[in-house]
Length: 189
Image 1 (tube, rainbow, N blue to C red):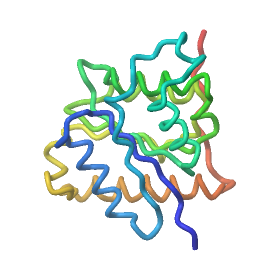
Image 2 (image 1 turned 90 degrees about the vertical axis):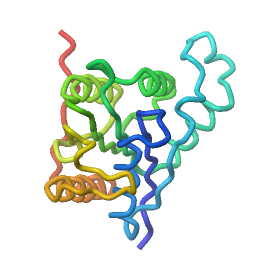
Image 3 (image 1 turned 180 degrees about the vertical axis):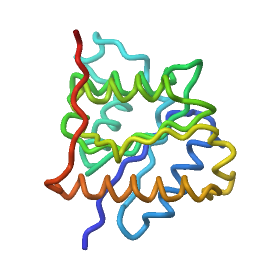
Image 4 (image 1 turned 30 degrees about the horizontal axis):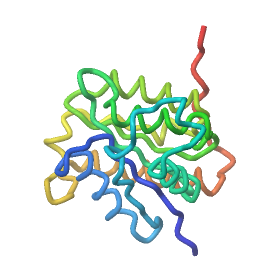
């Protein structure tokens, strides 16, 4: 069985973030199923500027290629000031005209102190750019620092079950399971 290629994107730029610890825990839980690549350049992307689309910077082109070669994407992000971290939103903005997320299976984990506002906002953004997301591939994790250790272990059994379920659901989505109910694009009116 060929492993599915997953690009993991951490919304935090901190080297020891809880979100990065959670990504590593997810990687450990699914080593037999997924071939993981961690996108480490979120803080290296220039500020999005449509004028740069005529000559896309190499670091952005590299990001496009990583997305293109991925069978699916896992985004794990904190909430900053009840919003999406600017570096993550900037990365997503770069992908809009290239349609890098269009029809791409995506799992979204928002893991923060609360996270509800950022989760709703980012989910709306991902759906409007045509990411494929189901209820089972979107997870809100409040109080993440009490549930994931610095050595990449999920210490909360409920969260462990939720992450395993999310990863299985992402795998099913990539395989094209016919019984999936995708979340609809948000109503813009």
